[in-house]
Image (tube, rainbow over all chains, first blue to last red; front, side, top):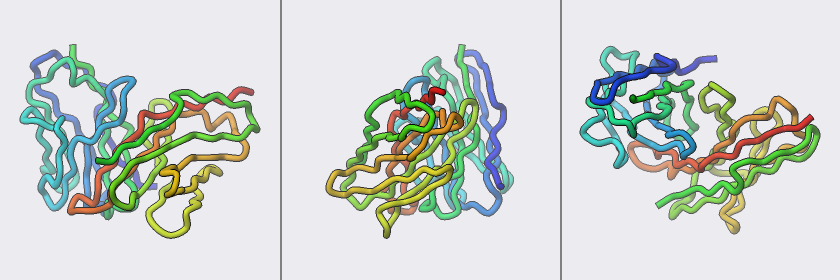
Length: 113
Length: 116
């Protein structure tokens, strides 16, 4: 069964450093998403991406965050200058239409120290 | 604004017993409703969804959920729990509209434990 692949599974970074979280969505999907889950809290929407541009973003997705689909297969989330409160599990998801539910990746656990 | 409330952060049942995980939502438009399951160290897997049509939806692993508009609920049930059902379950709502095709709003999750 097709899956969404995320790398790395766990990343530790120092506060202030830039991190790039990588995702390979399912190949025929058109909609891409990033969500995050801070330990013990809800899964929260960050950003959706369609037709090579951001279609919607939440209040969490401030200027420190950016997304890119650099080569037609990868979908990346960049955090420019990480803060302690960015520590969370980050999930990538993709969907063929957006209405059928998403396929989520296994997540990247980001720890900022 | 949409929201999801899952009653009970932790539910424990015996193997073979009924599983009932509660979800209530609020939405100003007809909602799309989803249940996801997360096994340890894995991603979120879609269990079932309601968009339109039949209000009782069946999903994978013997789970089903019923959309009750009058109660704004979408509770998840399984007649007989299995040890392999132990996981965290998330209810989510989407408006299903707009160019973004709707983004998911998740509940806090309910951790299901199954005792032998």
